[in-house]
Length: 235
Image 1: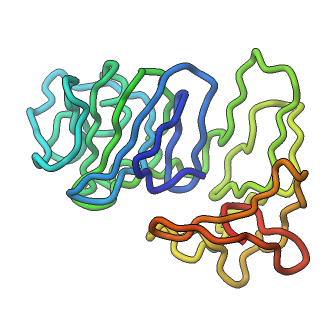
Image 2 (image 1 turned 180 degrees about the vertical axis):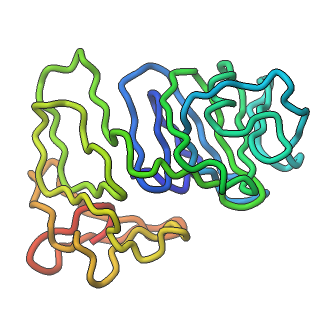
């Protein structure tokens, strides 16, 4: 699950969503940043047609953008109705700005893309796109024949964990509601009663997590508590 994009660089075509997200093995990079006008977009979308009569629009000047590229603005009263309509029209180096005022209309908007160097950023609050539990979290390219190892992940909201049929999977937790402490506030610690608590497996020494993130810019040692490690980013 990828959520609350903040100065993160992702490689490949992406599905970024409130309930679940992942990356495909296609080429390209996408840069997502937090806007000074509001938290970053959780963006992902399905390809759609763009109306020839789309109105002109603009976001507040404070919203970040790629220098030199075009700016495609999404939301009510803007040129594009959904994020993926803008993503389908975008070219390398462009910026897609998503207006949080349109959150009610972005549900189910899901796609992948391979356009290089896109910046995806939200404004007017937290822009949310919910893929409604569809899609695949981890896409493995057809050229990769060795089994990939997928351990101790949380797949929230449903969907498929990994596309590779022979993948080695263990300690993962798939739950409609993993009971994150505060998903809206990007706090993905597991709350009491979560069905994912202690469901992880002990990874090999080269994959064991020694530390975990502490907001906003710190970290601390991560030690297993309970009957087993918790899947996800936090113990």
